[in-house]
Amino acid sequence: LITKMKLAAFGAVVVTFPVLAWQLYRFVAPGLYRNERGAFLPFLIAAPALFLTGAAMVYYVMLPFVMLFSLGQQISGGGITAELLPRVSDYLNLVMALLLAFGLCFQLPVVMTLLGMAGMVSSKTLASSRKYAIVAIAVVAAFVTPPDPLSQIMLGIPLVLLYEVSIWCVRLIELRRNKADAAEAA
Image 1 (tube, one colour):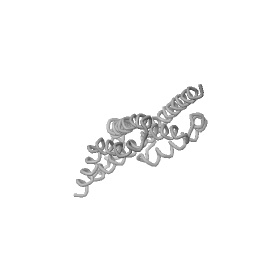
Image 2 (cartoon, one colour):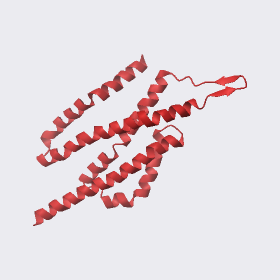
Image 3 (cartoon, rainbow, N blue to C red):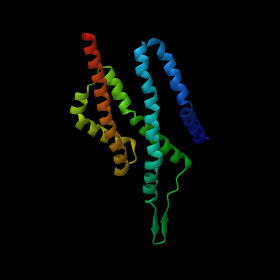
Image 4 (cartoon, one colour):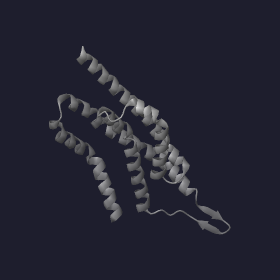
């Protein structure tokens, strides 16, 4: 019963997310200026797209490797057989945890771009702290994936690439801001 309830709740959040995001936007939009509303709308599109990209990576790339690894732990020989007999609840817990972890980790460009728009980070700071970010990505990948190096690498490499995309997004925001400041000064 609990497994069915968890699956129903997870499915409900996935199915209703577009409506929830639109309602959130409609709640926040009256308090924003026109240019801020225009800046907020791309994030409303990018966040679900990146989440779905992370979830698709889990489903099509990560889960086959995790299942292959898990099934590879079966032992057969010498009259002794040890088989993996996963419960549905264990499998669903693993899948939901991986979907959530990858989906949230793939939000890195959205978060960094918002921080760049707020002026809290700059592209130079992000570029100069790249080595620390790679270590942090390795730590996050170690915590949110199963304890095998292949799955950690499968999360780490896309996150490093998304970090680089984040640097470029913040750089574009800074160029737009500098161009607007130059137009105001003139």
